[in-house]
Image 1: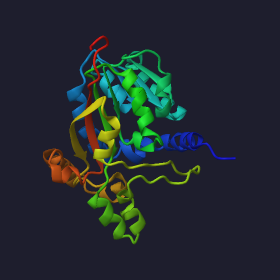
Image 2: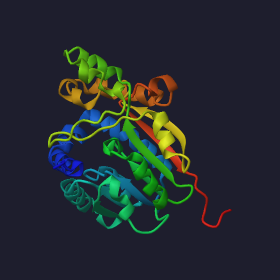
Image 3: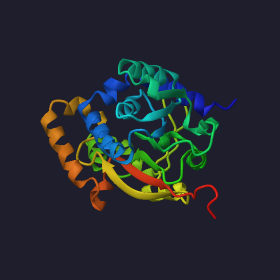
Length: 275
């Protein structure tokens, strides 16, 4: 019998949920990543809008936006992630503004109604873990209004920090893994399937309904989060590097060296009734 990839993914993320804060969100490096994405979210979304969040994790982004007066439907494949997200929303008095759903990205088509969201976003590479990204995009086109902004944070393809870090540790396979592009790993309880499309490939998949308006890099000079154990002793340096990242995040040469890329799209499908 063939194993169900969705089952493995659920198991993986349910397990990851227990240490997600200490492994990523609560780290100094993870904090710089999230602040960089929040700068873009705060710029393209406005109070009073209704937003769709894919792979919401423990709800940190949803709560951040709800505190600014936005309503959200926030989805994740992991029931444990959603449990933690609801707890966070309750503790911050934003639970009435957020509808958390246990729902994989591949099943957003089950959300009812057409053109119901003023925007959508997916943070920290959740869409790199779907096997059929075009299918997810097709469903997304049905769910957002014409003119709506859509922000995707995806895995970067060329990360000098990663290459140097793993080469120095005698692990060339890990050092060069991102250069392999679409790289599906065999499913087992300890892994998830990952693909790494380039910015050009993502833009092609999103077209013609979604037009790429801007993209930037996150984590250019700031090292990846798996270096946290070593880098936690240098908080001033991390803060300084984050400042440099902010200055160069839009520059064509440097943004291609980022750990993650943030792509901002606009839904350009016509209004109903428009010829």
